Image (cartoon, rainbow, N blue to C red):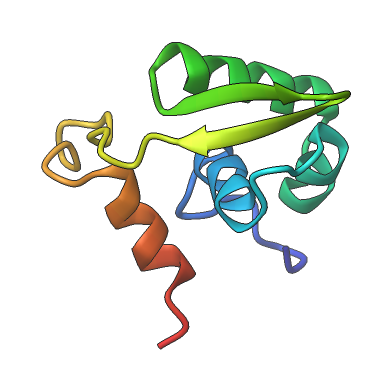
Length: 95
């Protein structure tokens, strides 16, 4: 983030979700580095996304693999007419 910017339009939850959309096998360490938060914060966010039914964690050997439940509606009343897939498409679009 550039110097002088203290906020962004998307939450850390959305940023973590975008990391997982790009790499479903991403490690907590890698997500933390990309988002700019601690590993502990990422663990909390992933747990909250799982509890909300947005993520499903599958254990594969010593690693986790995440599946995004893209049909889930966004949580805020202003956005709940859109889904997680809509958000991912919007943010990951290269247009």
